[in-house]
Length: 137
Image (tube, rainbow, N blue to C red; front, side, top):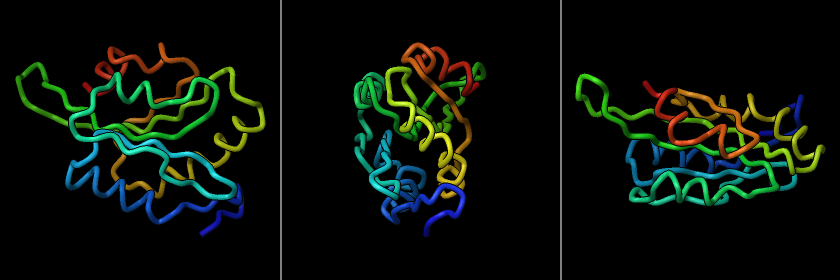
């Protein structure tokens, strides 16, 4: 269903894969891209994949959306998990691409029920593992 404001549709597979990540935990992360006039799944990260694997899956010069299921242990020694939504918009990407991703982000994020933390990054240092840990706790 296209959004009148951004003209962007969200492929059903995006929502289905997100539900699998959230409920069944068979993916560690999902990378989404805008293809034409819709958001599609670009890559699925296996449950055993690391944060480094996730970072390597993001292109250096193109925007992407991603969700990452982050497991951590609290100071009270409790195992927890938080689902991050990451808007990746590197400085080196084209201005038009940045505008399309920025204008479609909120609409797409609303389709993914269960996002707990949002990060926006233009550089890998803005979404380092330390930053993710700090935002999770």
